[in-house]
Image (cartoon, rainbow, N blue to C red; front, top):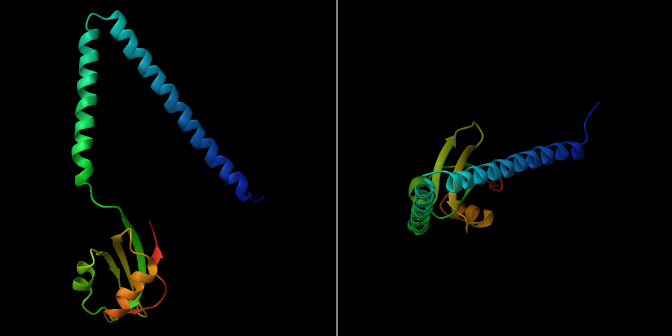
Length: 141
């Protein structure tokens, strides 16, 4: 007997809900443990101060890292022939060639591009530089 798609989606949702519930129970247990240590332990103030310093350190690291983080990118699969001057063309437009898979009829490129680049612009860029694009670039992620 074949399963219908809604039951598969229900199963995935059920698993996700179970994981979220387990995470909630784990968070509650950790909060309870910390509260008991702080209230009843002799070193409660040390635990509280250490937790506050750790939280402050993470916040400062996040604030420092945010401007230094790489810009959001998109991954593409492109089938093309005539790979003329690919490295300079791509580098000029902040496009990274991740992988090249040669095939008898067309080569398959896997590219990382700035998120602002759409399939039409990518195709136009490759065509104007002498490439023959076999089909529309496929967005992977």
